[in-house]
Length: 160
Image (cartoon, rainbow, N blue to C red):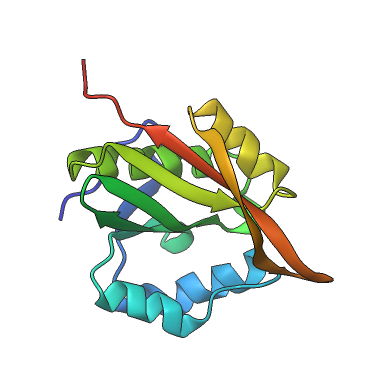
């Protein structure tokens, strides 16, 4: 597989996730989220051949995404940037790579869920053209029970 073309700086590169990356990916997940995925979920997604990519800078994984594709729709399963690398454009780079990959695989729309409390992610998704299309009640675990998810989507227009 070839690397995805994106418009971010030269120091970080995107490449397909490999089984050997799972420990580093899981370590980032643990630091980034109060309710992280399990290592087994990552392993299962990789073995199910979901498009899974890592962002590598100076030999270390600083971000990743996992995507599900079916028919003409894509669903962002997980997208994450290491906490110490957030705010530097890496999330936008990953999101644009997701959209490029989805479009290249024939998707006409991309969906994702996000916590309403994740204002930074919501602002990023909104700035890249995602729109809120609904809510999933009690979708995420939270410190005091459950938290809703905002469902967002973007229509992928054919290249001009």
